[in-house]
Image 1: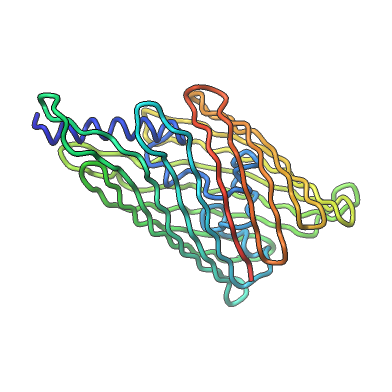
Image 2: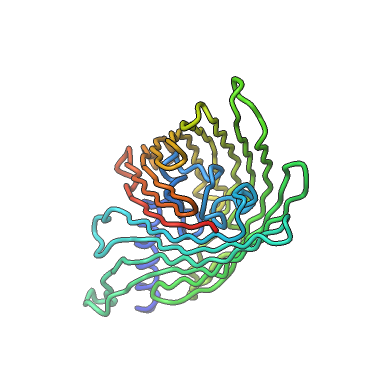
Length: 317
């Protein structure tokens, strides 16, 4: 085994260990929450109200706006034995056109860690700074009677000690109804299902390959106008990761949101994760016309997990 292979294997193992702490699978850039609002509600992506490309693209049809733009940053607690801080940084835009169609584009970057490299004799070599980035596109179409379908695709570049490039895609469908009633109060319902991160393994060379964190997800959200200035929302969702086949995982979450005067919100929830990856979630938000400001904190419940915070800003116009 040559020194380059040893370095690559070690770096891969270390990065995957940190990523497992971050989200329970390889390549968390494809699965980690990018939206502070949904993160605060137990990582329930069906409760989308922004960052539509990475939550539920079809939810944009309920926003009654033509354009949307979002940016967010997620910062994870420092992992033992590493230098730097793992972070996920995201920007996304969307455009609704021809009434029943919407197109999206986005970019994600994950990195910030540094590992020391060593040769076969244990002598230090150069430091390694692994990172991933994706360029993402999406399309959603309103089929009729509240039903919609969507698809997103990603071009993925991953750098360890060597580079790998590939692609992944997601397909899903949703149902929305803005005219339901709960206890004689106006309410809005959304149900969403998808299969995500579908794609071939990334090949870093020298026999080192990483499987996509492919998953199936289903969820729903219900918001109720309990009074003129008071709104309550609840959401539930689950994700089952069936790739890699030797590290399957179940993530399930739920949360509540209270909003005053369609402006100030407080949120709380819980995310269950197998392999001790559960979180208590909390956060708050502010909205003024089309502007959205949100923050969330996810507190790990076991040493195997990772606490992290997410901040986001968005605008619909």
